[in-house]
Amino acid sequence: MFSLLNILQAQIHFNLFQSKSEDKVQPDLSLSVPLCPQMRTLDSSSSCCLRVKDRCPRPKGFLNLLLTKAFLLVLLFGTVWSITGQECLPGGNLFGIIILFICSVLGGKLLGLIQLPTLPPFPPLLGMLLAGLLLRNVPYVSDAVFISPHWSAALRNVALSVILTRAGLGLNPSALRRLKAVCVRVAVGPCVLEACVVAVVSHFLLHLPWIWGFILGFVLAAVSPAVVVPSMLLLQRDGYGVEKGIPTLLMAAGSFDDILAITGFSTCLGIAFSTGSTWMNILKGLLEVVGGVAAGLILGLFLCLFPSSDQEDLVLRRTLLLVGLSVFSVFFSHVVGFAGAGGLCTLVLSFLAALGWKTDKAPVAAMVGRCWDVFQPLLFGLIGAEITVTSLNPSTVGLGVACILIGLLVRLLVTFLLVHLGGFTLKEKLFIAVAWLPKATVQAAIGSKALDLARDKGDETLIQFGLDVLTLAVLAILITAPIGALGIGLAGPRLLARQVKGQLTVWRFLLNPKDNPVHWFWFDWTLNWFFSETDEKVNPRSVGQN
Image (cartoon, rainbow, N blue to C red):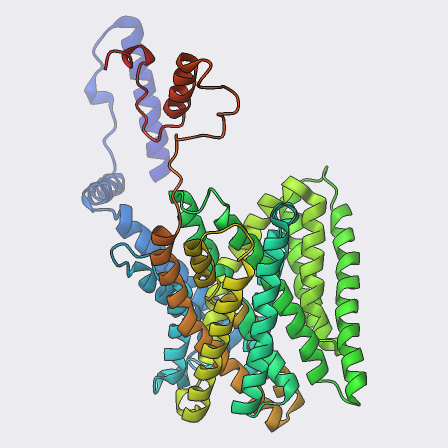
């Protein structure tokens, strides 16, 4: 009955509209059928809802974004909880990893906000390390934020794979050919001598076996690109040391320094965990080096050929293959018992792939950098969470700090002497020596690897040696990273010459000022005007009027 009335009403209104358009006659309102009570109730309720909808305030802007993200987080937590159960609740591994990641990111952000006048910002990695240290050593919090050693070791190995991949992609053979002897001396000399000195000192002070002393030495000998490179880029932007290429020298030599330290560490690690005679252990360590390099060459050649350049999503596929092979190399080397070969394989395959891709490696390196942005907080947070303050031996800490300081002193002197024949002034030599001190990234990546292998062996003596190596690696980060960053920021403007834009003298061989001073004036002024930092371009005709 209700639908029949609606149809009848619609037909009457249509007939009235037609008659009005044709005859221009006013319709007889008595012919219209009144709405039924149900229809009137429906219309009134819909109009009321529309009025409430129009008058009700809708969240927009930041409030809407906040509510949306909160709902997404709740939805994600509910989904993960329904799948994993207790793992995402306090005391579970997933809960611990998420809280550690969030706290590490916040710690890095908060430390990065601390900026003193005329000083560079502190490295964010210190905040990440301290966040993990606090989560492990604060009562009650440490019980809720729990990560099993197996999960922690797996995540740190993935982070190691990513950082080694970045190191291989960042190698610049042209810079090595250009800087030649100076780059080689700065990269090799301080690293090897500091490793040897730390090995000797730790053997007599900490009573570490010789092979474990060299493991500790190569862990502490690597310079940190996470501290050196950003500081060098800031100095290069302001023109300090650019004329003699000091920022380029340190950034290029830093990559080779890290590779040398990782190679020495991997060799000593293979010897330390081998069983048999000493000569057989040394032979096994050398075989790990050769095997890692050979596997890296094969996989690197594979990446040069696959995927081909005519495929879609080329950058994404190259990145997935590169990172996947790197992670596989590190984990597979543990399975076959050649733990030191995985890192070398990753370095070689990423370096060879970068050579094959040439200029196309930049977008791949950018995507790998994004992966590092995710794993960097996890790596430093997990390293900090491995240290329990109450279990530290005060004598071990004190003697360990002594080992670190002696190694830094030797590194400082050796670096100063090795750049003596590089054509640098006394102030520039001092700056290079100071800039070669900070340690952070490599120590966090490989500092716990010996401890993980010792835990797999189940030998308490080896576990104690691994804890000593990890403790000194964390102490080296806490001591040298802020000192190195502040030292570079303070010493750079005071010890390096600044090259001002626009004052170019390299073109003077093109014209002789004595033969044609007018032309030389206009040529020199044109260069200064063209390379001016300001956006205002002065009319050349007005120069002679001033």
